[in-house]
Length: 110
Image (cartoon, rainbow, N blue to C red; front, top):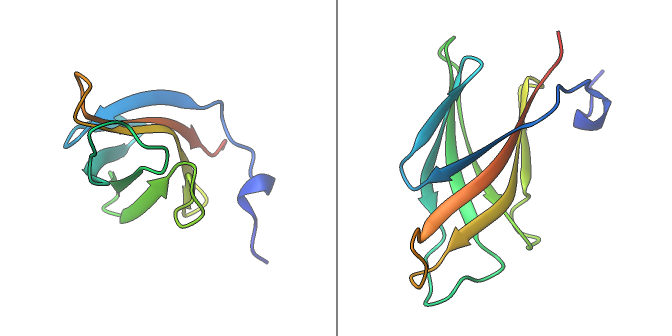
């Protein structure tokens, strides 16, 4: 029987900000911001980010997360073990850091 992400007992989220090409290593997972939606002269509300996720056990996944849109979900769960939520994505050419993504990362409780 499949378990929904809502039924999983998740640890409290940890928040990270990644610029384009940056990665963070968290609890045996490497999460990298691989690509972003095309930037425009000002920030738009329907940005997306492509992430790669690799575990220290050689599992790997990719996901596209979006904010304020129906095409890409802001949340992705990987093998019922890690949940990533893109809380803010910024792509614009008129700001000091033109491409970044704030993510909340939850891990399943053992």
